[in-house]
Figure (cartoon, rainbow, N blue to C red):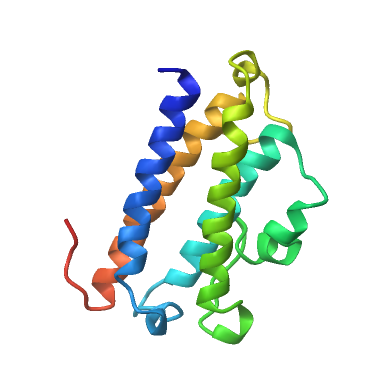
Length: 166
């Protein structure tokens, strides 16, 4: 199995786990900030879409004009690293729109990634990242990053009164 396929398998595994968690939370709860909470489900899902785009598409092959229909600049800013989740749903796209971007970015990455050659994986990413230096590591960090956030989603579920999922 190639290094890229191993990385993609990890991303797919992390995404399946994320989707299981996300699908267990009613969209009516997506913008609810638990007491002393710093995030909500809508921000987590939007952030995962933004991060997967930036790590596995933008840093690997650069931004393209057609990406604007995949994920807008406004979406990237709203869910970026330095963004602060707001409790007001009016500040965000609907849960359905956030989920659509989340799903579409993932599908686009799965279509484009297999086109990379083994040699390209060792090339530096196109835009700097504090942890990721090569294109292969962009894919590997994507899966790790998603697992970090699915842990946060799991904690949010519990704070919203739901039982743990196993």
